[in-house]
Length: 125
Image (cartoon, rainbow, N blue to C red; front, side, top):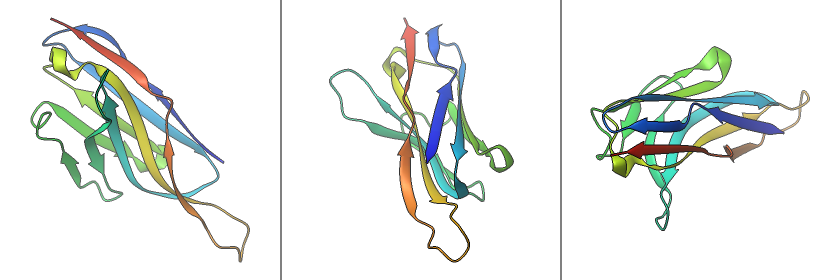
């Protein structure tokens, strides 16, 4: 199986910064896209930023210029550096990874999407 473990959430004042981390472990052959989503109370989960293996990234308009996504392929880890935080950034942040699983030689390698457990980010105004 594959597990994603997030860390780095917390309480911060508006204008401050936080860095989220998400490490993937388990039977991993390769990780394709890694992404961060967030869900605020009463709202749908939304994509914040995504990054492919080669490093090309995309961002939600609401975070462009403030958030930076990066990844360490050797560590199967994705990061989200969040600067100039606003109260509207308050949400539970979830890591997502598109993983091709490792299997025994000759067996097909399944490809599945996995989610972390979420980490709370609260920005006080």
